[in-house]
Amino acid sequence: MKQRKLEILLEEIEGFSDPELELEQYQTPSLLAAEILHFAYMQGDLADSIQDLGCGTGILAIGAKLLGARKVVGYDKDPEALEIARKNAEKLGVEVEFVCSDITEVSERVKTTLMNPPFGARVKGRDRPFLSSALRTSEVIYSIHNRGSLAFIQKFIKPAVITHSYVAKFPLKRTFDFHQKEREIIEVEIYRIAVHE
Image (cartoon, rainbow, N blue to C red):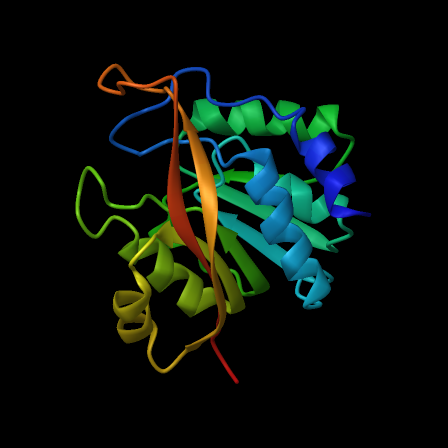
């Protein structure tokens, strides 16, 4: 499936009905999700078992299944987000298992983790438990972080290594009351991390 077709399908995904600020619930934009998923697909990282940590309404998990992943599980501790994720998977005709769980309790091993963890804008270090869980349970990780996180990530993930990284645009829609603009574009860094080289 071409990246543009995947993006069009992912645009069908319903976002959060009532996003929680403390969980930093921002919908991953369909363009960015399609870009990351297509990149992972081209690396051969989406054929086997996949997990999406902090899956929210399911965009990365569903996209992985659309690209032919054998088994996909999405974890989130927000039952309302998971309910939307289940409806989204049904709407797009894919089978994804959604589990209500804190990501620190995830124990099943998978080939690849996809995630858009909290950036720690509200509470510093919010992305660390996500990275720790992914490092513990997978061989390859695709993760989105604030621009300028490279040195921290490299140090935090050792002995795992970043094999690829690039800067991307992340359009943020006005989600919470304190947001001034209808839409703001922030720059993020996408990392592909190999846990066992």
